[in-house]
Image 1 (cartoon, rainbow, N blue to C red):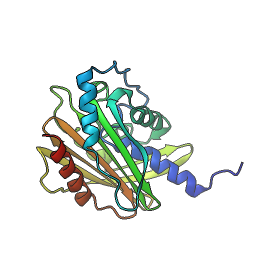
Image 2: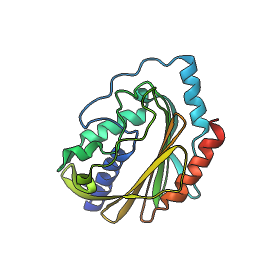
Image 3: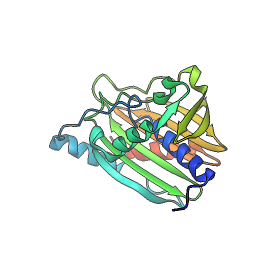
Length: 224
């Protein structure tokens, strides 16, 4: 077997840590979300309705994951995200979960996820109906996490993150742009009623504002 090149190792490291910045992707590094109970018919129906609000494939991209819907804690995306984060170590451990929701509280929340990719990058969207008392955005980014380093299987990547402005969308919104080894990782979160939309866009050049606007337009058309 041919060993992976340094470029392939770096690409995997960026991909693994990128999973961790999705607002819905997990809880504390090394902490497993509690098993989700079997959803009630009404909650299963809500998850399917969220699936109808997911974005279609952007031009030139193909689906690489999903669409998947169900209880947050039961989704393959949730389990994959937690496993990916366990592969990584951080020079600033608090940055491992920066900007994320508490997965233990959201474990049975109706959720829908899809991911698209091309040779130029990827787009991943997640929608979740937030539990009562949790209808807000993830906690703001710790200032110490404006720059941090993560190591995956011996390969280290330095991440530089800054907050960016979004057009006024929904009841509340926030967005960040992260640069890692020349790759841009744009992440946004928009709250619309009791639904939280998370979008992560990865590529050499990322137009996060416009892609977030289009995704929110779809959400607000379907969820009334």
